[in-house]
Image (cartoon, rainbow, N blue to C red):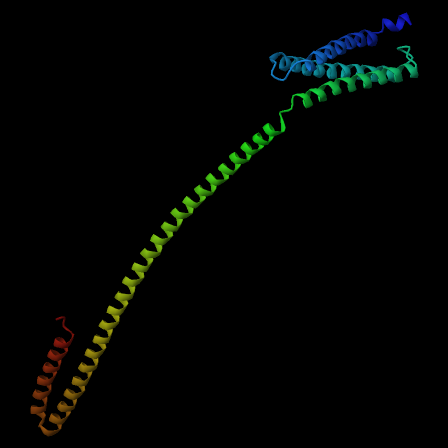
Length: 227
């Protein structure tokens, strides 16, 4: 039994037990103080840190036990001894977890405070969402104004094109009327020339033809010359 007491496991175990006893005393002191006492908050922080340290020590001790359990004869360990050590580690871990959970419950804010905090967070969220919606609406208004201006410009361009097409159409109609009039005049002149040719002699016909050709050219020039 004396050999087991010199085992590193038992040395670490004793240190852990001393730490657990010290933390339990602090927990007793913690429960004896009011929530307004500043020492209570400090004790809670000390116990919380101590429990975290305990969990780390227990994890390392369990890892060492696992390695020793792979070669029990080398470390002179029976299966009962290994099981006993695992049982102690598990029990001590539960003690540390119990103190941590007790602190969480004891230091939790009142229900009203929690509700106020949740309401504040909800209001902040709604405020952010409202700001985002307003920004989106402003952006949409700007985009709609740009679209409206573009449509107005397109409407003006379309109206200008329509007026230009109507003007070109009127010019084409006038040109067609001029062509028809000139064509009628040419036909009438041609008819007169043929009548004169039939009624006149050869020389006279030639002179008349020249004269009428000149008249025809003058008519064409006058008809198609710009005003």
